[in-house]
Amino acid sequence: MSTQLIGEGRVSLPAEPGKPLRDETAETRNGTATIFMAFAPCNGQRSPQVTAQRTTVDWAHFLRPLVAQHDPHAEPICLVLENLHTHNTSSLYEACDPPEAKRLADP
Image 1 (cartoon, rainbow, N blue to C red):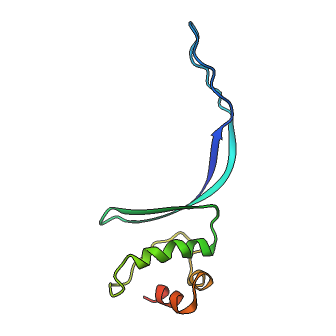
Image 2: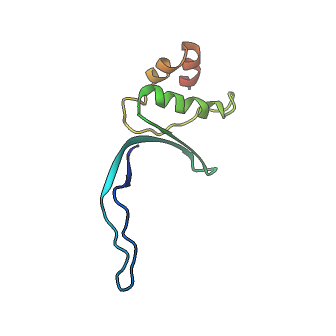
Image 3: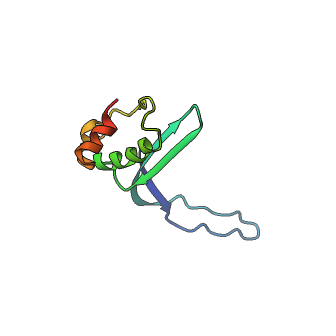
């Protein structure tokens, strides 16, 4: 998911005798970031990664170590993905050499 990075725009005014803390609601926008998240609900594992953008190569680089963690002789990994153009087999071929991309993509 893509998210905005928000910072505080103004400093709160301190409390004084007879006056409560005065808080300003101004915010500054500090750009955006993308959060890739993989999780295995059966064993409670989560694997987050934050990147500056969401490109096909970023997604492939996120996916590669996740596949490497599993036994190469294990059953295929089932992925549930958002419907984005970055989530396809061509992403792997763009980020990896062809034999590695084929190994990652084959069921």
